[in-house]
Structure formats: structure tokens, C-alpha cells
Length: 42
Image 1 (cartoon, rainbow, N blue to C red):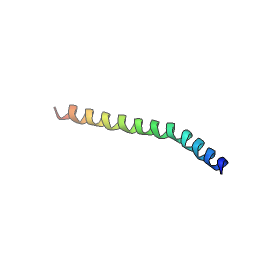
Image 2 (image 1 turned 90 degrees about the vertical axis):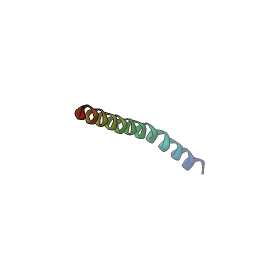
Image 3 (image 1 turned 30 degrees about the vertical axis):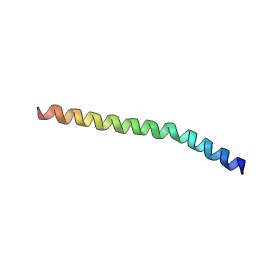
Image 4 (image 1 turned 180 degrees about the vertical axis):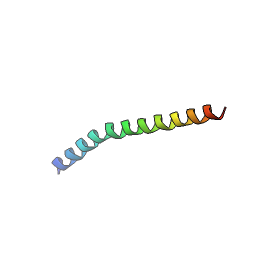
């Protein structure tokens, strides 16, 4: 059914930016923790 295929594509297209932003936030949190950990040990 083309309507269901279109809806799936729209759902994927709208979820991708959300997942990307959440992944970027997680990466920055991890990098910040590593920096503070290594700076605290010196």
C-alpha cells in the first residue's frame, strides 16, 4: 500500500533528526566527562 509506505518514510524522516540530536548530546556528555576526569587526575 503506497499510503503506508509514505507514512513509514515520513515517520523515519521525522525521527532521524531527533535521534541525531540525542546522539550528539550523549557524545558531548561523554567527551565532557572524559575531559574533567583527565584534568582532575593531573
